Image (cartoon, rainbow, N blue to C red):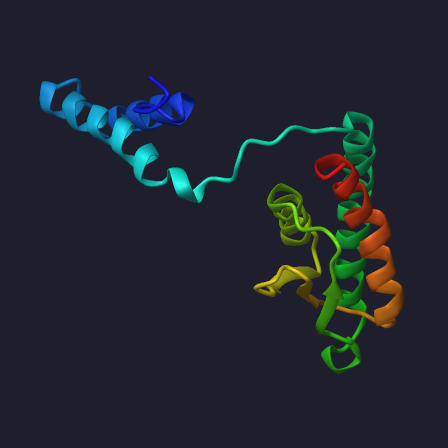
Length: 163
């Protein structure tokens, strides 16, 4: 069963979405929905990350709290800067952050954090996964920002996914 349906929930969702989009229970629609529900997960199986487990749930909970706090603070800071400063006075640039974390799941969570945080954007991860390039909307101290990322996000993510 796992061979033909590597991700049953994804298959079920694809089947349901196809039927809802077509607004039909015609046998041809159901057959094509079934083909898609089986075929798409099989074809994209290598693109999905390996199954992982959270090794330190309390650390994950604390990290979630930090991220929520940082999202709100960053949204406030970006709005304030946009309303009170001229564009020429905003120190916007790319920064290279050396990484110790190599776990794909941890890197995916780190990417989500940066993509959700106003004022930051994930730009590139080096092929060896040792350097992350981020665009920051307003950054005064590169070294302090790197240390913040490493202590506030990378270390907890390493505890959650690599320990």
